[in-house]
Length: 94
Length: 136
Image (cartoon, rainbow over all chains, first blue to last red):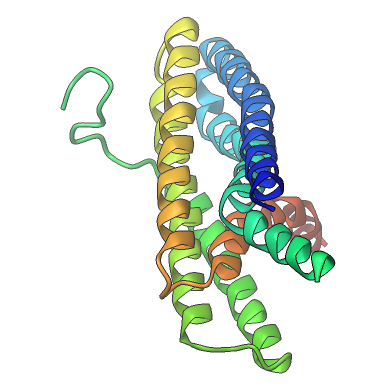
């Protein structure tokens, strides 16, 4: 029983780590590239700064969505899922 | 404030406008969520407090992102890239910290702490529909 609980906790922690690790790489790179291109665009057309900033904020928020989903899933895997899985295991053994 | 700080930087009106838009949608979705919890009979004070916490974290994260974007667009390309990458790491760490606080402290319901984090992205996905209606 203790071994099974240990495996559940280990898998949840491993899953959370993988989820956060993979999920957070993309948005960081994407946002950086998008903003550097926006700076280039503002350099070419300074009068469009307001529009570019507005579009950039929305674009960054969209690209960050996957990172936030990964964060939520990781937090649920660490704090919520283990107790549910352990309860399931206990009820299955009974 | 240091080189990477905001000092007495004036907040751009675009950032304020977008944050207001997101905040209004977060409030609307929060009210809907509270109504759903009331209807299914699972409402208690932890649901409300968790919702306040999660909504504040979601809007705060968006506002911080807006400030960093405002700062980045006035820099050169390479510096802007670095600023945004740093801001992303910092905001994610703070988001993680505040969400963990919300999930661990028993006066907040974990469900209503985590659900509002995705409200800003829903609001942005709905934006083309609203803009289309305004034009019509």
